[in-house]
Length: 316
Image (tube, rainbow, N blue to C red; front, top):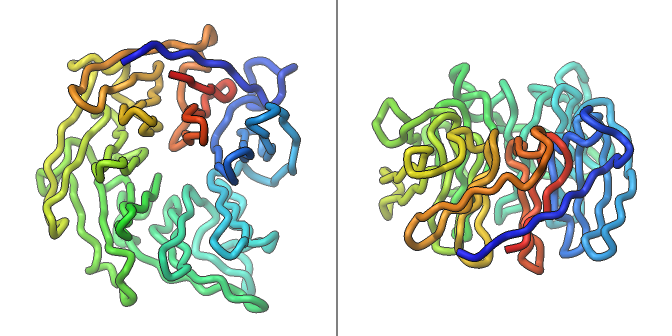
C-alpha cells in the first residue's frame, strides 16, 4: 500500500468545536456534486471540482438519509423530524401523510423502483412512489426491539439487499415481488454466524464480498454460500492492527483496499493480504472520529468521509 494524504472541508469554516461542522451524512448526487448534512440541521451542496460549498436549506431536524431515485424524486429522512418526499412531509402523527415512525437512517431503491427505508424503531419500510396520492408503506423486521433499529442498507449488483439492524445482518433477494418477514435470512451471534449483533455500516465490494463495520468487533469480511443461507466471516480487530474496534464507516477504494473509519482514526486494509496501515489525518480529536455510514468514492478515486469535525477527502 502506498502513502495517503488528506485535506479537509468545513461547511462553516468560522465555527469551531460545535455541531456546525459535525458531518452526519453525505450523498453523491453525481460525479461533481455532494450533499452534506450537518448536526446543525443544515444541508449543503459541495462541488468537488471547484470545492465550493453552498447552503441548500435548513431543516427542522438532522438529515440522516438523502436519496434521489431513478425517476428523479428526492427522499430526505431525518432523525426525529419525519420523512420528506419531494418536499411533502410524512410523519407518524399525520393522518394523511402517515408513516410508522419519525426516525430514518438510510434509503435505497431496487430494480422494480420500490423504495426501501431503514428506520430507527420502526423496522424496514418499503414503498413505491405514486403521483398525486399519499404513499403507503409495507413494514418488515419490526418484531423485536433489536430488529426494528436499523443502521444501514446495502444493495449488491445482483439484487442482493443487506440490512444492518441491532440484531445482526439480514439478507433478502430484492428481485422477489412478494416479500414477507419469512423471506429474510438472518445472520447473528445466536446462530453463530457473526461475532457481533450491532452492525453499523456495510460495503459490497467489486469482488462480490460484503464488508461490515461492527460495534466492538472491527471490520468483518463476509462470504456467503451460493444460496445465502450461511456465511463465513473474518473479523479484523485491534489484535490485527486496526486502530479501533468501533467501525462507523467502511468503503472500498479503486485499489481494492478497504478503508475503515472508526471512533479513533481510520485504517486501510489491504484487499489481498489484509495488512493494515492507520492514519490520524486531523490534528483535532473530533476530526478523527468518523461518522456513521458516511463515506463516498468520487470519480477521480478520492474518498470522502464525514467526521465529527468536517469532511475528510483522502487521496492515496
